[in-house]
Length: 128
Image (cartoon, rainbow, N blue to C red; front, top):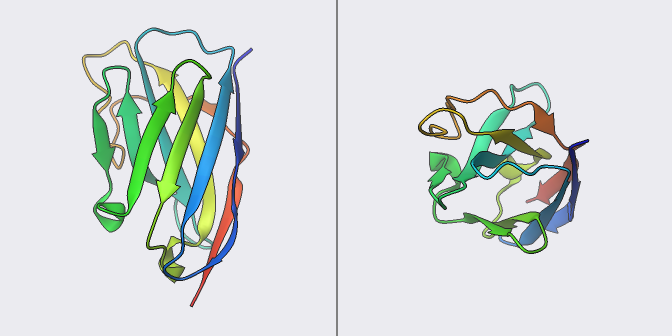
């Protein structure tokens, strides 16, 4: 059974940093797409940062230069380092994973794959 569990959310002032973690279990695909999505109140869910099994990354323009995705393969943990946070980054953040059977994942804001595995989400609140 695949499980994804996020942690690390919280409240921070603008300009601050947070690191989110996503512990992944039961997911044993050698080729995969993983990523972080977020959903703000009243808005649609959007892709933020993605990574594939080859290490290829994609970043939404709104977070480029501020957010970094990484994966500890030994521990099966996906990270999202968020720096220079802005009030507009306030949202529930979700990690997601999917096996990659196509040639590529596609950019995280418009992925080719349909993510089936999701975490429960963690709240990030940035105050001005």
